[in-house]
Length: 297
Length: 256
Image (cartoon, rainbow over all chains, first blue to last red; front, side, top):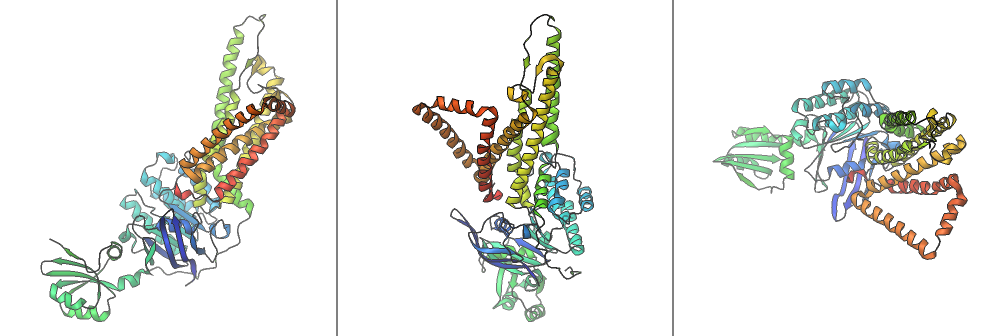
């Protein structure tokens, strides 16, 4: 693994608010990382720090070992697509696409055209007059066609319908396979992108909560369901991150599960199911106490 | 999971030449050439044609022997205010976009400087040339003063061109500095900025009055002459440019 992004004790404080709070992490080169967390968790601030648009209060963040702040050596390799991106009032999408090659040496104009057609983006209409989804399409097209070695998408899909979102995920994956690069995807729609992500970085209240390969996350969590007594026996001594009760029936989401536990649970007649990444993250960031019992009627 | 087909090559950290990076900004600012070039030229053309038509009609209906003043009209000078707006919009809207696309603040500002100089020189050359043609043709044959409203425009082409360039740069500078304050400090910055400007203006005028120095102020402008005064405006332009630079170097467009 080659580290491309590294944060050490990274802190960003605005008047009285600590948006990013002493964060340490590393991102591997040419992987897709999901930057996940609730609204206001510090995701956007983190991405602004990564692209040198914000200045760290403390600590450091580096790209290829160098600070990104006013540093063309590393910034020339970045493309940051944000949900709230503003464009000049008089611009049409075609103007954005015409200016893009200057910023991105790897820009693929044919690819951009193809994507515009697929996403049904009217390239000759004023950006101010585009719908929310079409506006998102402009960002997605630039992000993909830029082929920037470090591409960052901050909630890029706002207003896009399911078909367009799927097109984005498919294109992203295919193009990533053909042109490997480091992609950071900040999103709320965790389950939709779960299959895309190789690494998950979950941030909450400015701190990193989970920093793990997605496979490992999934492999170590499972849902055990069955009669209450049998479930309680099986999960004894394990970390139960969520518990649902329906009459005498209990479904427990367990972290740190092992093959032995799975085997004995199955032997006890329990149903052992996978946990979706979204469920896992919601359970860990929802502020729900570990032993919280949810009574489902 | 996706297999990486090739081992990653090291990230090329040699920066692209400064000219390429600055050129990228210039290209972004000219990406829609209608705003900085075609639209103002079109407006200018239409105003000129309308003035020619109206003034031609007026002339045609006046007895040939009647003495007739020349038609003086400053229609061309909307260009200066228009460019101030272009400067404001470029800083306010293109700056955050360029940063998102991996530009540095420095490269953007240098590019904006090139953009401003190119447009200033271009429009000044246009106005100076048009004023010269107007003079040589006796006001397009009908005594219309559309471009050559002041003595400075009727002097040597080079003087008119120099004056136009300096004036245009001043408008770009004021626009850039004002927009920079907005980008950095938003609405609060605007309140403080305008309040400060009004305070300075009134304070300055009061100071001159108290010192009884209005004569000296008037004498300065007489001494400097039109071109000289325009030359002194470079001080303000330079101040605006430095202010825009200093302010935007620490600006964080994300807070918008």
